Amino acid sequence: MIRVLLADDQSLVRAGFRALLDAQPDIEVVGEAADGEEAVRRVRELRPDVVLMDIRMPLLDGLAATRRIASAVESADVKVVMLTTFELDEYVFEAIRAGASGFLVKDTEPEELLRAVRAVVAGDALLSPGVTRRLIAEFAARSKEPAAADALSRLTEREREVMALVGIGLSNEEIARRLVVSPLTAKTHVSRTMVKLGARDRAQLVVLAYESGLVRPGWLG
Image (cartoon, rainbow, N blue to C red; front, side):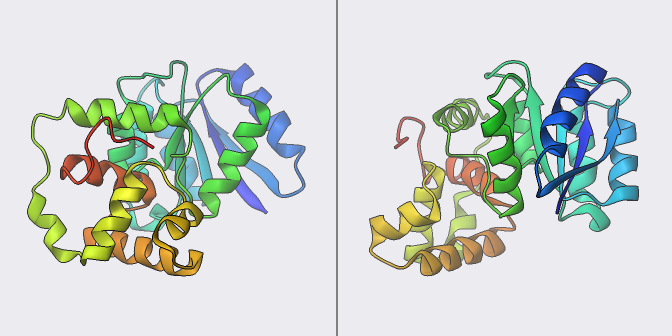
């Protein structure tokens, strides 16, 4: 079972998500939180697999809550999916840098929400939709201080190539086809690259690809 925590200050939103998720045979909502402080506390108590986290909440916003969850040893494996009302939310890029595995617009289709929950548990960041890649590119382009390119010196040429392909939003299967290797080999390259760069997941690897200059805004596939 995939254990989900709902963090949103609107009870109707939480009720709607709970009804949808609890109706699935492989998903269980284990708790709810109405603010960021409660979300951090409930994650510590319940150890969910996924947190659906609203960005704007009282006491502690979703961005700060996500940073606390991602930085705590006991919750480092918890996946956070940010929920936002607007596609181009000014905090989304920072949320991904803080440790979120992706984001969803609140009025997303039910099937997309279910796919998202299952995807992050499987280790796939929510980077396939073009809007997510455009968003990351937009905020990376505004970054005042690009990340030091010498971080890439730890990577092999093939790992840099794979990182660039992750950066434009390709899945492991798409990378495998592009490089004419097996999906397992592509996955291994992605995993090694994340370990070498200290990236929490694919979402942060995409951010690093843009910040290091390995991928430029406008290169989206």
